Length: 96
Image 1 (cartoon, rainbow, N blue to C red):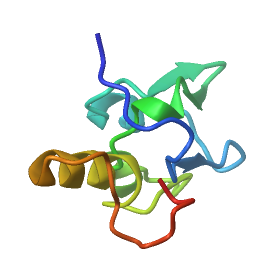
Image 2: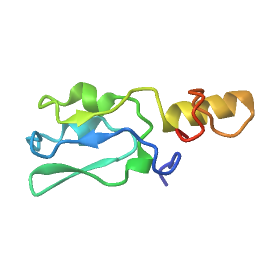
Image 3: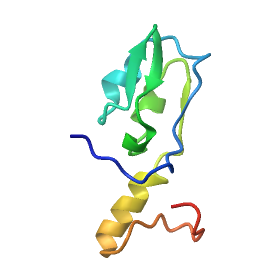
């Protein structure tokens, strides 16, 4: 079972018009966030994304964007380290 992070806070975006269907995102994503369907990448579930940046950093078409190190992953990690609820530290109660 793959780890889900916080619901509906991922910054992951995929521009299908730019996608060439090369499959690099599928190969590098540690949480199986992407699949290739009809020769284009698709996001299976954005809540699986830990925002590591592997997909965007390896996309030759620059079809994937995200804010690396913010949102889900940072909130979960910081909450774990502090022994608190997930908190991204941005100070905005709506961000997490």
